[in-house]
Image 1 (cartoon, one colour):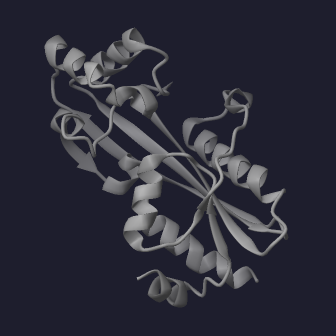
Image 2 (cartoon, helix red, strand yellow):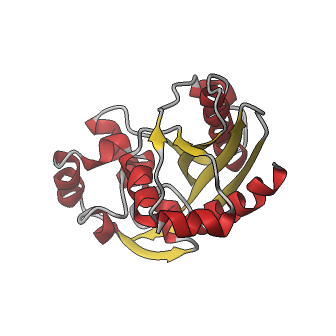
Length: 203
């Protein structure tokens, strides 16, 4: 599968994921890609003044560039960032259990937006492109007992918006989505594929 996809898009370089997200790793593996993982650690507070969609796109590009600058062999580095937005407020990963409860209680019964920024940067050329995908997600009304049960399972703590739609329990919170499902998981696959097809024509 990986060889077929690589031939389709003309990918003949090493592919590097600049993220430690197990969900992005799983999705790329599901497509059949072979890739290395080099997590990017950057200061994400430098761009808090940006609008949410621009924020994730900018962070995705910075993550990819952060890794690409130290890569000497021909490679393509992918960076990504996801945020959840409700009424203009970006809901990041919860800081603790109480914060996770606050976030989920806020999302309960409401429709929020999930933005995922994706960036591709070439090494050693340091050429890059970035884009963002947005999906609307509606939660049913949640009661406190099920919110705490979800938090007790530990799932919310490493996720923007304190939930994962791919989780057995988290999936039960969502009554409706409008847009790309995989965007909510953390990597819009169709957009990534289209970006890669476009990006390899640069070389």
